Image (cartoon, rainbow, N blue to C red):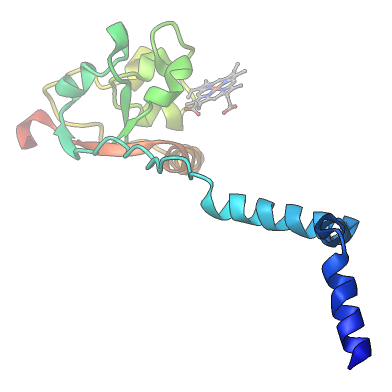
Length: 170
Ligand code: HEM
């Protein structure tokens, strides 16, 4: 019993700061830092949630060769062209089809025949904007194949925004 009393007295006599010094070990410091960092991660303010902007709604429209003509990219207007009755929005390819571009002749036009024949000639384009559509007569296997290649490219690159019909069918 004497021993116990003696130990109690010994402990009571100890400088309280010694107890704290014993806690300040490298391991404890690391554990403390980890705890603080984890707490920070848990409670740090999260950045405001931003939702991706919705793409503009696509309104599928019916065009005639005459109404399509408006979409030639001039004065900042969109650029559309038609391939086999489907109207593509090729505005992102403005460098190709916009004013001054190498393929501007196709802007606002039915480009089917020109693409199939790899030709910019005027007669590839529908002359009478109020007449019937190009019936694609005279195409051989080479033209159909070439056209298919272009359509695949357009399908993967551009949006279809409408269909092309003759003025009489609009
Ligand atoms: C001297 C001959 C020609 C050269 C050097 C040429 C060159 C090019 C080049 C470098 C591209 C871009 C390919 C890419 O990176 O996507 C391109 C695309 C194109 N070329 Fe030509 N081309 C020529 C003739 C023609 C002709 C005769 C036509 C007529 C149909 C044509 C129609 C197109 C079309 C429609 C595109 C696709 C543009 C797009 O991706 O929207 N090219 N051409």
